[in-house]
Image (cartoon, rainbow, N blue to C red):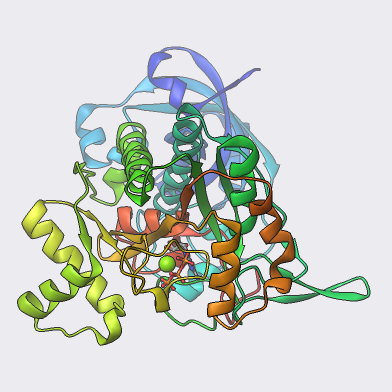
Length: 439
Ligand code: ATP
Ligand code: MG
């Protein structure tokens, strides 16, 4: 018999169908065996009665996570039963045939049928492939998937071309020590800390480019917002008048992603008791203004305008109170805190750059880049670096390139903050941190 999906059964009351999926849990009540069956569309209760002899004998052998095929009659459940247990829906299946397709080996480390897995993060990560079968945990990645597709959709709509840039590089893109060295045949190479240089090159041939790609950071962090491999949502746009244009673009993109998630992931958001209320426009304040607010409202002093995680939380609290916004742009970061390619402001102590914060956390950095070859060479020298070291990068600017800018947006931090997850690793299928390289 053709397979029917659980999601289709409410329309098939009175029909005989064949379902396939995993045993979410088996419950025995007196002589009846209840099997909650799970497929990609939901969970449904099936009932096996002793009269269906063969099915009953097979059902007695079933345990959690067996993969089975169950044929039977779709029946409406009494409203009282549905109210008691809404997770399995308004219909049930009276099983006639049960066929085991595949069975787990040995004991399962965790019971994924619980509505909420109240376990330590390390346990969930150690048993990741199993934990990912839990409906609530799966919701995180359905939202993540929606984010990826929403980003892709809005970027294309706005005329950006999708590119994939190399992740194996001959040297660290932006200098610094936070890159992983790898053995590359008889040479040393390193993993990309950002697609920065290649996306700027992209502007020189496509005007507007975006990338959804892996970013590797060799930073020995032990925080709830850092991992060593993450997926960046990058964008770079040419022919801008100022870095305000870049923020306009990013604002449009981020709010559009929020909108898509809010529209298409209602069920998943509900599992986390989350409502996305869009706030437009996103307030923009300079870092100097932010520092004043922090001092006045929170009694917090910023050392050299270097805003830390606590400062970011506080300024978001202020944005929520004052502007009813979950987002805020902080602009004009000090030159000392930004990379050499950042466009200097009128006051050369500051740059035409920004961070975007969301619910207490930085989710993106961006700004206008220097596009003049000679200015860039001078800036590299000012930072006591050697222009020869950046030969390939500098070539981009020798051939003529318009004023441009862009951003790097952390995909996992967005999902973490939408759902209020305690740790970014919860929003990553198989996270990589200082200690964890498996599974
Ligand atoms: P932070 O100051 O939080 O360490 P950053 O300023 O070093 O981040 P950027 O180089 O600006 O990070 O990267 C752009 C975006 O990529 C960040 O705003 C963030 O959303 C994300 N990101 C950066 N580093 C990490 C990381 N280690 N793990 C997860 N996401 C990251
Ligand atoms: Mg940053």
